[in-house]
Image (cartoon, rainbow, N blue to C red):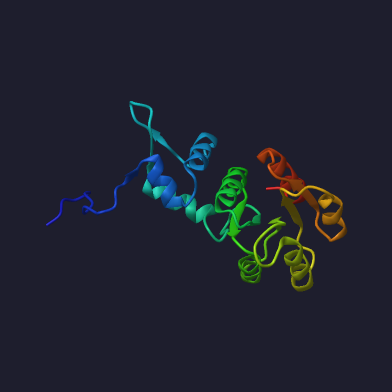
Length: 190
């Protein structure tokens, strides 16, 4: 027999730490920290100054702007074989209001585009198997003119090559994340 106004105990905690909340949302801790600072995700602070997140607030946030871009910002597809770089780019773009999907290869990226066409593709030139230039050509043949920003550590004449081949820009690695965000905002405002 329960008491009125009391909830049955669950195995899931109502309050999550920063790390637990980041894992719940599938983002880096720095991302959820920035979202809290911006007021996008409500956070509560312990007397020691630690952040705590209520599970139902995180679920509501996912409903508003979660995976699949239900009502999130413009969809950006990040294509790179380096998972750390993809995570870094995803976190940087999500903080700015974009919805981000990742792909580790050209084949994954083309499948993701078939599933849901993004408003912008950030594409690494050097990848195993099918490189970025080949993927750009296949994407243009199948999907028309989705804006693409190419990036690579091989900077030689790639800026001119990128524009001649139909990309909207080229950024050399390593790059300042703000440079990438600014370029994305120019093409597809969040």
